[in-house]
Length: 123
Image (tube, rainbow, N blue to C red; front, side, top):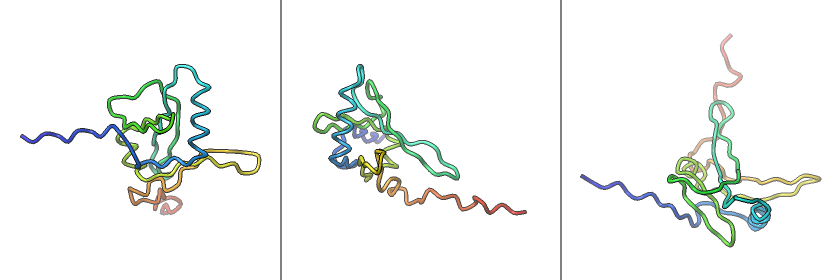
């Protein structure tokens, strides 16, 4: 019987956090009580494709990979990591607003996130 490979819980360069995003996430984390990290998640599917997001987290689960870098801790579950491997996260200010931007998201899966059947129903 062959042993299952151990899940790699420690990340290094699978997720690239740009300096502006790193600074903003550390700032946000420092203002929260009972929060130890930021969870990056993937959800959805269907015609709108996969979506991603972030939320504060108290602790990792048994299925999380962890990225620790200069005061920032990210938790990413194995399924989300398979979609986000190679993603670049930045924090961008445009006009009067600012937001986190995920670049190259879902590049590892080879999909565009588009639904070929949308808007083409037979009449």
